[in-house]
Length: 229
Image (cartoon, rainbow, N blue to C red; front, side, top):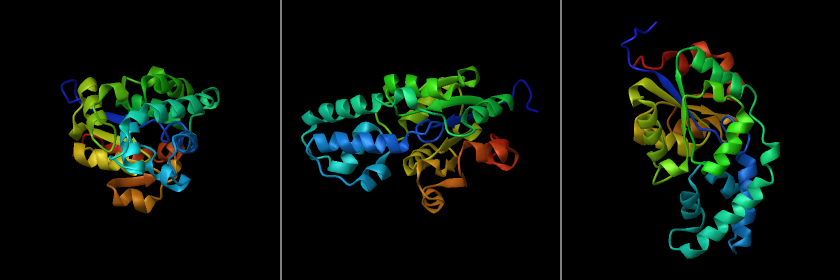
């Protein structure tokens, strides 16, 4: 057991697709928003971009030489479409229990999301584990979304954690790339629809199916060794 003067240990959680089952909802809503904006993008390409910040997603899917004055219309369309699902959002199996188990093991639990503040409120409500969450960040806390590490840096600063005393749990290759740039170990879940092999290729130190799977194996996971590097 760490002493009172030991550095705080913690875990940063992505939320969309990691703790709340939203990846495919976002893919459908972004795909339709892009269609309304006159952009032809396959749904497969949209799905693979989910997990990026909104601006980064548009750069990735339709190029940074686009008419950026039209971006606000695409963002508004995505949000309007996505709001229709908010009353039906559901936490992934074992998500709330995993968050509480981490807090119960003395880890400082931080939500590090690229979602807007309005979206983030709906996600936290669906998760239903505010009693175990020490602090949280959203897109308003960072200049750039994932794969840039800004959200992770903001989460570390707000929580008083360091890369050496933290792990990050996420579901997208963009999470892994952000972790690589921030120097934080990346534990990956496949419940967002990305393969284990691709996740490992993007820095995952271990891969689990979903929060319930990680919870069942918590004592042999990276969560049991946080801060031991």
